[in-house]
Image 1: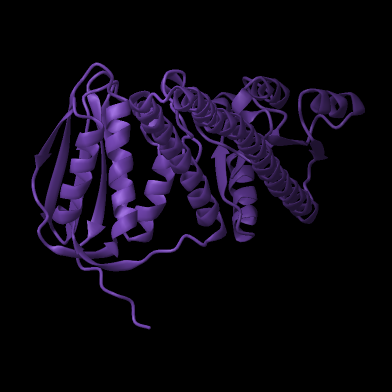
Image 2 (image 1 turned 180 degrees about the horizontal axis):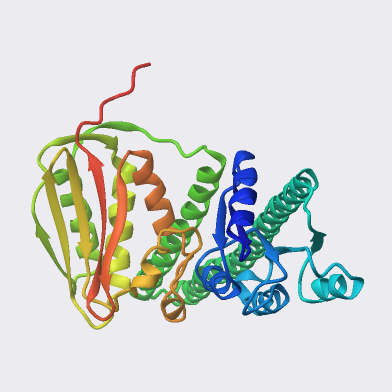
Length: 374
């Protein structure tokens, strides 16, 4: 928008009409004081400013405008009939003007100058947008690089831990075998098996994330009853964590069309996370609801919870809540894989949480999903 400042009404009207005929949006002010009030409220690309005005003259207005951070990039063209000497033109430029035109005004020349300033403004704005986009992209590269380095470090540590444990148990096994101590052999074997299972889960997660990124994560969808799947999962989880009381609320007796193994993977991830991140508690809830064409399954713990500003990030790849990463192991990819599995089924994942009161991680699945035609 252009602001014309002139104390002569006929000058304002004639110049406004000319500019509007060429599709410029125009505002007017009849004094320097009125102009300053408008500059504070509105954004202008260009100000056409008369020099000789009662009260504040054009030079004083320009100097005041240059002090406004909001308007410091606004172009100013001075118009003057009386002050045409070189010293006044010089003062105009030193006051912040980009051009100084003497009256009577050649409208053709003025229009060319206005169009030029508008073109410069548009180009400048585009350059700023491009610069911002480039800076954002560079920052995103840097962030991705930091995440990758952090992930490699975490993965190395997480994979090394069970490997070191297995190596230690194998050495103990050798000594126990030499002694013929069968009970101790069985005990060490059981502990080694636990560590091997952890290693297997870590490798499986790494393979899954690789398949997701290459678009090769396969699904074997079929009809099955979620209640039956959930019964089996809860039994296994309870056997592995006998001190935890798992309370089940609700049922889903209907058949759904999905990849049973992958849905089990998501449920197990939610349950093991709930147990892992709720130290000092011994109870979790599994809430199942069916309605409005979808199935809802949520796993509620009563542990440490997650701050509101962090909740939107928990399903991102490699994301680990900083305060929990110090105390709990993990690659930070389980929830990301779970989200990808559910999204590929046409469902949604989410979390409801309050710090200190626990979290409920949940997913929904459509009940009306059917096999795709060959």
